[in-house]
Each structure stands twice: as structure tokens, then as C-alpha cells.
Amino acid sequence: MIDLDRLVREHSPALYGIAWRILGHAQDAEDVVQEVFAEAHRQSNGAAVVCWPALLRRMATCRALDALRRRRITLPLDAAQPALAQDDPAAIAACRELEARLRIALAELAPREAEVFCLRYFEELSYREIAETLGISPTATSTALNQARSRLEELLAEPNP
Amino acid sequence: MNATDFDARPNPDELQGALRRAVEAIRTVPPPAAQFDAWQRRYGRTVASLDPPGPALPARRKKLRRRLVTLAATAAVLAGVWFGTWFGPLSFTSHGPSMDAFAATVEQIQKAKTMTWKSTYYEHITSQDGKRTWSHAGVIENAYKAPGLYRMVRLDDKGKITEVEISDWMHGRKLTYHPQEKKATIEKLDPVAHDAGPFAYDREKLNAPNLQWVEKRKTATGEVNVFRHAFRWYVAGERDWSTDYWIDAKTKQLVAMYWPGRDHYDPDSDTATTNAPGGPLSRRIMGSGTQDIRYDVPLDDSLFRLEPPAGYTVEIKQRAHVTEKEMIDYFGILAAFNDKTFPDEANNSWALLRKIDRATSKPPKRQTAAERKLLDADMRYNWGGATNAPILDFFFWNPDSIVEKSFRYLGKGVKLGEKDRIVCWYKLKGAQDPNTYRVVYGDLNVKDVAPKDLPLPVDP
Image (tube, rainbow over all chains, first blue to last red; front, top):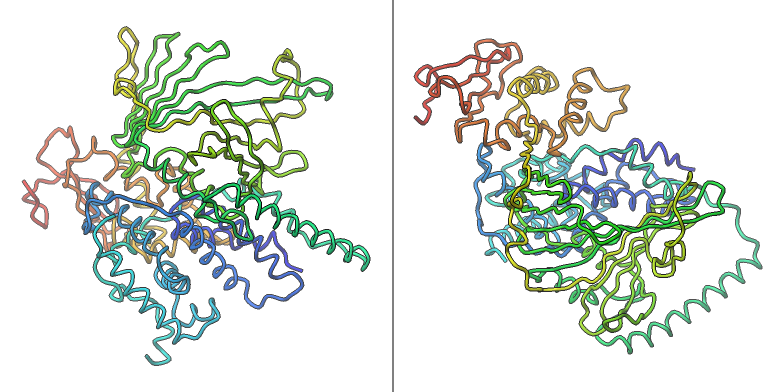
């Protein structure tokens, strides 16, 4: 039997961080965390879970990406290539736009590619950790990541909608 | 790729150009401080519902339950087929209407240049002894003009205006005035880069897969289809909460919303509205209705003018920004947390953010004093939702304090306490000597320095 209180207490902040980086919206991230714990509990009903952190991390990434795809954001952008000059409020605003564009682009990737990309660059996991988290081989991870990068570069290079 | 590479952490050089900047931008802004105690209370119902299941049902009951489920599923499919035919363009999946079904509804909200709607806030109260009920409602009339202009007019129960609030989110200004007292307030808002438009939260819920069709209703202007989104986390007695969305059968426009849905509270059939209020209460249902939603209504610009009416007393509220001392103290806290070294960037680096994430994830008892101090400071200054809000606020969000483009950060690698090494410099607006720079050193001392004495050239 799982100690749900302990799981929630120990893993909520990390899962919230994962969901927040993908969604950029606090309340949506909280919703994802809730979904993850409900789903984790259902999946684990009667079965032993070998690695809770990996399972929860995978679920948080997948559910957050699901939410991102449902969102269907439309974002008008004027500045296609803003600089990351952090001492300029205009540049900070441009960064926010760039964040939003990446989130829109992530929603257009194949699910596996998006999951691999988020775990690699938002959570900074190694190929092996990503492979363990998603239950795929490190080579498949590498392939998916290359495809994700190429596709995202294309999408971000496209003119603004 | 060899086996060792599989264990490597990402290298920033793996990404290029806009993609690299976008990832850095996302990594640079940490999550807003989450209130997990409040979160657990809010989701208490769900957490409780996840308790281990009860004993297995006897075989006969299982069989009966299977039959009932099959019967219900058949009825649902037949109803779906009938409803799908009758509702026209809506398509249905096994989960109800497909997401495409509401695309036209959402699009009409997003494309509207102007909108108006009426919000009604209800309270249905039961007395302490449970024998009496009474209810009352407040009304707000709303108007929206793209981009980012909102007007709210609050009315009392006699329809008299008690408050008007006009917000310009693109320019970060808000005017509030009270006609009865003839007082007005002007305050700053944190401007937004893009106008999300009205009902952003509900637009997303219209795409939720668990949205269920409930009924068709006649209204004063035609017919609506009512769809319900069930919430799992708000508790109303023994049942969960819900929101009803009323969508015009012909135009597919969202014309009303009710929170909670009519399965919990129906203001139209509430007979307690005429009961006299009073006494201690035992239970209260609070809800709101958004009705009479209209699209592309002609609205005069004067409705959104941020000018108080003539003859009003005007108060200008300034948001409390951090002081220079608070900013410097925070730099010290951040450096103490970061192994007594100032961070690589004024805006948090990936490495620092990971460290902060790790500290946040620890149980409080396992946090070090430096970690606790930083997390406490972040809680105290969390209005910006950023981990290093005091630094961002002082240098980037408060154009009244710093001379534009005068800030320079040189703190990378500087140890806390190094009195000869510079962490940053900037020019203060309104300083006694407008030519000197304020220079912060590693020991957190601040000195006024002439541009010629700075180690790097600066713009005149």
C-alpha cells in the first residue's frame, strides 16, 4: 500500500516545477500535479512501483504536455529573434514571448519527442535517466531528441503567426 | 555515441539560436512559490478519495453492477447518436463531444474586438439551526475592448452604481472610483505582454475532455445547449463542484456560464431570495453566473478612459518596490545560499535554479540555514513570482529608480565578503550627483564612484 501523503509531500514541489516549466501557469501546473497523483494511485493499485520518482516525473511531463496541446494558444508576435539582454525590460518581455513560442511549438511535436525534449532541457536529465523515466532505450532517446530539436528549430524559425 | 555520453547532462551548446534562448528563458524563471498546504486543502477531496479501495464486492453484486454498467453504456451511446444527429456540426467520441466541437465557440471569444457581460454573485445561506435559508446576489456589469481594456461596474441590490474599475493591462494602469464618495484611485499594474482576452480559464475548460452535454434549454433569446465541466476538488456537501457553459444552439457562441452548475444551485428557482437575512449561519453556497455575453458590441472609447470624473478626490497609489538596501541584502542572502559566491548572472542561471529547486524539495528540517533564509526571502518578496524578485524588481521592474541601461552585473565568481571585487553598478535616478555610479562590492558595501574610476567603460 502506498503512503500517498508522503508521496504528495515529497514529490509535489518537483512535479509542480516540471509542470510549471512546460505550462508556465501556476494553476494549470497544480491541476497537473493533482492529475498525476490520482493517476499514479490508480496505476499502482495492487502493484508494486519500482521507482516512484521516475513514474511521477514521466506522468507529470506527459500530463503537462497533454494540457499544453489542449490549450491551443494563439500568440501574435512581432519580434521574431529577441535578444536575451537581461538588463533591458523590453528584452525580458521578448523572452516571455519566446517562452510562449517554444511552448506552442512543443505542443506540435510528437508526444515522445516533446517528452524527451522537456526532460532533457527543462529537467536536465541524462539520456540514460530519460530512457529509464520513459521506459525506452538510450538510443531511442537520442533519436527522439534529435528529431525534437530539428523540428523545434524549424518551428521557431517560422514567421510569427 | 558511446556509453559515457548517455550519462552526460545537457550542454548548452547542444541548442542553438532562438531555441537555446527560449529554453534558457523558461529555465531562468523559476516556478512561483507554491502553497502546498493550501493546495492539499484544496485537493483534499481528491487525496481522500485515493484511499485504498474497500473490500471486493461479492460475485453476484459484481455481475449486477456489470449489467447496469452495460445498460447505461448502451443508453449513453444511443443518446449520443441521437444528440449527434440533432446538434449538427458537433462530433462525438466515446468521451462526449470532441474537442473540435467547441472550436467555433472558443474562436468567437478570441476574435471578439469587444465584449460585454453581466456577472452575478450569489450567496445562499442556511441558518445555524438549519431551519431558515436566505440568499442574496450582487451584480457587476463588464465590458472588454481589445487589447487589454476592461471595465467593471459594480451595482448594489437597487441597481445603483457603487464602484467602477477600469483597467488597461497593456499599459499597466487601473482607475477605480466610487460615485457615492466621489473618490478615485489610480494605481499601477504589472503590464502584460499579450492580452489573453476574457474567459481565458473557461476557454481552456471548453476544450477539456470531460465536458458533458447536460440539456437543451429555452432562453429569452433562443435555445442553448448546456455543457457541464465537473470539478473534483471543491467540495459542496457530499458532491463535487461543477461549471455549466451555455452555448447558443444556432451561433455556437458562449452566452452564459454558471459556477457552480445547476446540479448544485439554481438561482432561478431559489425561493430564499425574498427571505429576510440574519443570524449565524451553518452553511453557505457561494457561486457566480456570467450572463448575457455579447460579442462585438459597439463600445465608446470614453468607457475605458483612465480619467476620474470631474470633482473627484484622486489618490495615486504606488506599488511598494524594494529599496536599495533590501536589494543588497537579498544579494547577500543569494550569495550565502550559493556557496558564499555571487551568482553567475543577475537573472538566475540554470545551475542556481536547479540548486534552488533542490532546496525547495527538501523537507524543512533538512534545509540548511542559508537555504531557509533564501526560501523565506523568496516567500516575502514573491509578488513577482520569481525566485530573485528583489533583484528583478529593483533593476528591471521599477523604471523610476534606475537610469535606463546603467545596470551592469560583474558578480560571477565573486565571493561574499571580497571587499575589493565589484558585484554590480548602476545609476540611481534623482541621485545627488547624477554622474556617479553606485557600486556594490563583494562585502555588500556600496560606494559612489565616478565613471572614470570604473574598471570598464560606461556610456556617458
